[in-house]
Image (cartoon, rainbow, N blue to C red):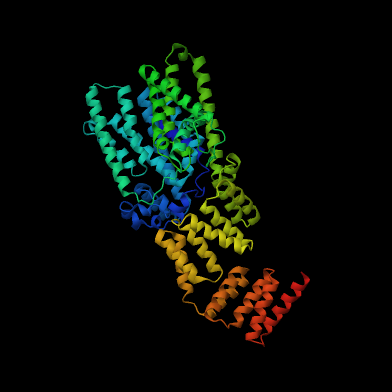
Length: 608
């Protein structure tokens, strides 16, 4: 089989397995990096991405320096006007290139096209990797991994570049997408010592030192460009670190048996080394490291050893640097290439024997591999369906990770979007027992409480969100929207200005600011017209808010009181409605419409 035919077949397999993912929606951090981030919605900002990391996200705590990712997002946004399709197309194109490079690297290591293609197909069809492909902002993982593989390909294919170490350039660029790409230096060091060339150890060590300096300089530059507002998210470094050996065991298990995949796991950090899972994980890491070294020492099994060491080394950045969640499947995107190499090396090793040359052995083995790939493709296809919408994704999380407060809250959000506020409040309160200091949860609680006429609780929870997260624009914008709906534009304006001072690129804050600016130029008559329009459309709360804005400019506006009365009648608040109609008649005694509305209110209030 020619290499071009193999590459085409591999690409076709991937397209088939991922055919149902191109219309999947945005999720997770896509909200503050794309949907609600004005900076990535204009190509004019591309030069700014390389100068100001605050353009990466509308949330200050997430503003890291990733200009390559922002550039790709800006191009995709312009191509589709915010539609997810161009994002998925560009990411998938990068993913296909990455899988093809994986096949190339494995082929150079084992010199067997069939095994290389099968191994790369297994990696490309692995359902755990589907989480990275479907998650738009996780393109950072794909770009950084592509850079690491690109450096290996340049090293293999262009020996002349080795003299000036130019093969490190893809990695250096990939660091601008995600810093863990710098782990290439460690992977390359392992490679040239396991697969030595004619150069002396001193020459090899000097080469590694130069690569280390280059990547370290890029890392220092990225750190310098990252705003001080950026937060990794971990609350306790000790607890995070002692959990990682067990997480490594789980990642290893998932590669070979990917059941119960979750977009957001509910594994909590261990608080003590007395936890038996810590020792189970530590023992596993020690045994795997020992096996890796032993395999690397033998020429016949060194590919296996290299792959296992790749897996362990590639996990180091996310294992040693404490992050918000102790585990996440997109962190295995680069490490799983190592396990793929190890598996390819094992198959190549087994096929070296004479028994493997028999047709009676090769055919069954090939059928088993085909069956595994078919099952993986089907599992990936099904995993894509989980990522279809916010509702399907977070419903899956609540099933797989029932103790995850983020999952419970976000599924509650999907219920709230459908108008099921009772169901949403149930999930919010369940999440609150797990995360009592979660500011975003208080915002969502307040929104649902506002919708269910619990104004006092809504006010309390909006204010609690601001207390817990004064550096988050969301703490201000949603409360400002609430105040606007209740006819308090001046208080809302103060909050919106606070949100914009925290995050100038926040789209919601900008839209609300423009809305307030337009409202401040309206006359009482214009507010009354808006109130009537909202009433006609069935938006009774908004009708009341607009009428209250009219009254703030013209306190003796009988028609505005009448509108509030009529809207309260529709909402079943008959006693409040009666008071407003009485006020309208005090101002304008011959107001027949107000008198009719008052009669309606009193009649229904008595019936209650």
